[in-house]
Image (cartoon, rainbow, N blue to C red):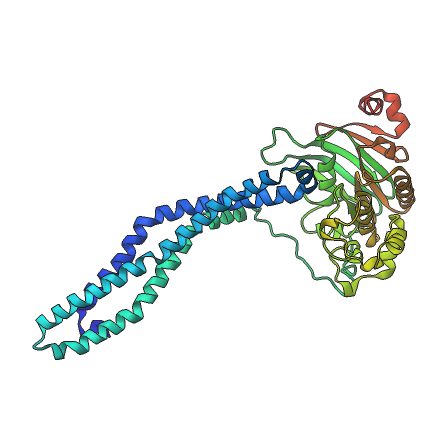
Length: 435
């Protein structure tokens, strides 16, 4: 409507107001990008300081290092706040400049309209039109400018996210299915009745100097108990991660009863597995929900809960010593429980779904001698009906294994039963004698 009434004035106004916003944006966009990058870096340092302080809470209090972590948090927080304030100021800056120009422009416009019309009275309606149009359009221009500055300020974060997403392999992830009323157990498991076989498997971590697992071949018979031994960094955990399907071989195959493990069947295979890591994660919820990990409270199978807790030697402690039994809140990361109690809850979690394959990543390291013996007895009993895979650092836990694999620098260098490996006088014998 403004253009129809007086296109020359409309053009001049558009160039004046739009040009001012464009000029300010062009001048400041480089600075916005720079402080956006620095803001992201400062934010990372803030979270790093918090995670380290609370992750090492006992050490921090014992060594009285609170002020160190407070300082580690304060410095990036001040920078973070400074960059945020700068971005907010830049977003609002043109508004005040444009208001000044608008009032000055109205004076110029009055003079212009008076010079092009016969009287001031005939110029007032046009002047009112432009005043009203400016009143309505300036907030829209300011909103557009603020949006552009916000996009520019956060561009580095979007670029990081974009890069991370495009680093994900193009292959589609396995379809995820919601938990059914039976807790997801109605889904079919992958058939497993013969063996797990590694056929010339090789895997390297990105940027690794050498393969974590190099041309490894072995088999694990169904319903046997096997162990992987070796020094730290030898490749034991990587082999287990490959069995879990957390990584896929870059060469060779992992065969389950002769069928290659792929992205298409990995979900069905994982339904066969119970896994106990070395460090147990516990959420700030009830003991029952921590054992039946990821299962809604209404779907928890009470019989399976108690069965798995008894097998993990934790049932009596839960029933007799915790105030609310299985409904007791464990606290964030299980802070109210000892290390041994957390590990036994982790073992109960692995047994809850009655899996065919049990994997223990040094799962008895935090247990006392008596409890470790009870848990190992339960594991040995399970080995008669399940396949049990141990990652062992304490070699006394592998004496009863049907087969032991010794791993060094990504290779299986020795294998056999406990007595055979001792007679070889090789790597296994050296590990036993050095402890």
